[in-house]
Image 1: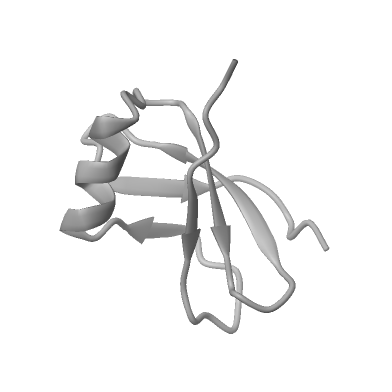
Image 2 (image 1 turned 90 degrees about the horizontal axis):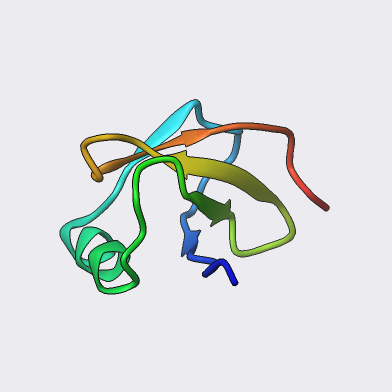
Length: 68
């Protein structure tokens, strides 16, 4: 069963990627997420984007349109 990791950011438009904070990086390691594992970025209001963890483990690349 896959683990869902949700990151909330105050954003107005869909980003291409996000840099994870040091706390978020530690959390992904604690969850044993690997490069290519899914993450979700939410704006805290109503939008959510699917992303994937990159090889360096410090960046998430946004994949698709918001899920509303």
